[in-house]
Structure formats: structure tokens, C-alpha cells
Length: 87
Image 1 (cartoon, rainbow, N blue to C red):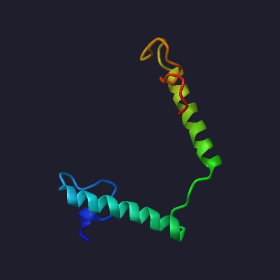
Image 2: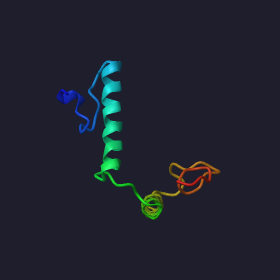
Image 3: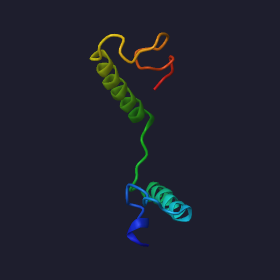
């Protein structure tokens, strides 16, 4: 496998033909699945995901509270810029 197709690379090769991208993508997916199977990639528990989301929501809310009133806010939208949906 050449370095442009290394599944540990964070980015796909730039301007890669479709077949090269497909091979890169499938290698990344297979590496992730293999890691789950052999225990080198762990899965997050529901509690860990909930804690991460709560921390993210708190950071977003603090960023919005630091934003001058009315900036980037449309009528009918909540504090997080969504129409009432969950993050």
C-alpha cells in the first residue's frame, strides 16, 4: 500500500481519482471495524456520549452568552441557533 492510501492518514489524497478514494475510504472503514473487533478502538457508552454532548452544549451556550444580543439570531430560534432541536 503506498503512503497516499495509508488508512492511518487523516485526509484522503487530494485530487484522487474515484477508485483511489473508494480504496482509501474502504481501508479507513475496515481499519475502524478491525479496531473494534480486536479492542484497539473502544466504543463509547451512552453515559460517555451524554457527558460529551452536555459539555459541548455548555461550551456553545457560554459562547452565545458572550455574543452581543441579537447578533446571529433570527426570530423564532433558540439560544443554540436551532428551531428547538436537540444537539
